[in-house]
Length: 93
View 1: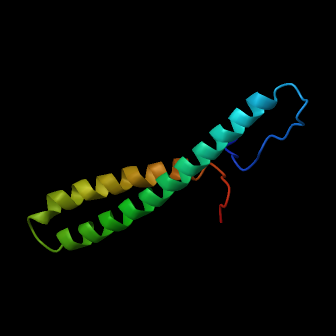
View 2: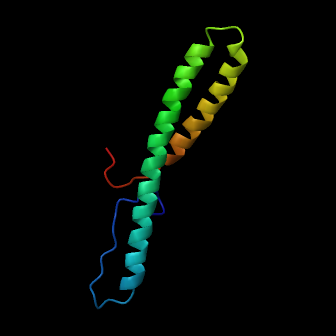
View 3: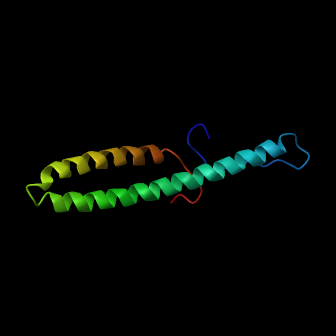
């Protein structure tokens, strides 16, 4: 987990000490994995919208400043995507 791998579960026998803690850690891992997958999906969607808007605005003189803002937003989104790629979660392809 410390290296970004969230693609695992902790399994303990019913009588093992720490069973309750292990279950809570597994719930946390599932929640993190789900959130990371959703952030990746949203990042991809944002990137597609920014690309479309950037292409449309570059065609007009007035849109050049806005196109620059969109380019900056796209760069920030790519940085977010790079951070999210550091994690391995269930169902990664």
